[in-house]
Amino acid sequence: MRRQSLLMKVSARLEAFLKPILVGADKVRRRFLRQAVTGILGSGSLVVTEIARRIHDGTRALDYTAKRLCRELVAETWHLPTFQQQYLDSVASCIGPQTPIAVDLTDLVKPRGRHFQYLALVRDADQDQIRPGYWCLEAYAAAGEEPVPLLLEPFSVEDPTTPSQNLVILAALGRLREALAGRGLYLFDRGFDGAEVLNALLDNEMRFLVRLRGDRHLVLPNGVHLAACHIADRLLAFNARWRPACCRIGAHWIAYTSVYLPGRPEPLTLVVAFFPGPDGGRLLFLTNRSVTSVAEAEHTLRLYGRRWKAEEAARLLKQEVGLEGFRIRSLEAIRRLVFMALLAIAFLVWLGEKTLGLAEQVIRRGRPLRRARGMILYRLARGMRPLFNQLSTPNLAFLMRFQNG
Image (cartoon, rainbow, N blue to C red):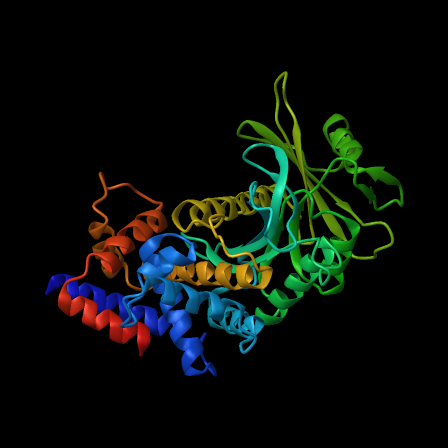
């Protein structure tokens, strides 16, 4: 009875989580999304056959269920952006004006996938090689202890409908800005510091903090154009002259100064962190946040450290959901399947924050070797698998009604 009660509670929470996302969807789409999310949670995989094994629709033919899922993934009768927008609307309430939103690109490498649609070349960060695959634009809100996924969008520069990587990024940022009503502080790594992205952020009055390459040119208040690395050197060497703010904090120095982008009137701040020693270096950051003291400059650096949440979430998706393990070949089907993975992880975050006691019961089902602190999403993902796989007869009957209701 205990296992049945736990499955019913989790299913009820999942139904409540999906309800605002499924507004306006027909019965077929509601059933498909419910089955796909529970199948991903139960299998920890994006392989359609593995998802189909966890779907109980009254048929004994696994091939039939897998083919039905494939047909629904490529069906033209539903519009993915509608569900993406409704998901963003459902999580927008947890985003405040200064909530860090980490935006990054990750690689979906398919080294042997010669028959995937619009396969392009991407940089494999693990192997530091150029390999076949897709880029995936990701955005996470660091609103609490665990990152809330906002966007997972695979794309290919070989796709005729994709004009350029920058335009994909700008379109996604526009959707986020509209859904979040301009709230949030967007965190970017190097690679997002080009003029096209920065100008769009300023045009749309979006708050941002971006790590700069040293060769990016900026304009000082006196009108002098200098590379960011040269401004940083002068801040360190002529602190008394270059204002006002070099202060030793811990193992590094922090400096800041007012700057502008070439051709733009908006005041910005260049924040620099210097690291001492023979192999010392510097980190350069550009922001349109107000920075008027060393304490605010230090707080800016700590905000940027929240961007690491994106790295952790991408690793979770690849390890516990098998983000790179899909076998379906259509790019549109890949986008829809990746969106299902986003919903699965978002549900784990929602469950951990809304019902911590229930989340702990799920974690115990995964039989962790020790009571580790943190990394609750990993333990939740592993606890979900036996919950949806080790089914008694009453639980199986209940799950069939839930998935097909």
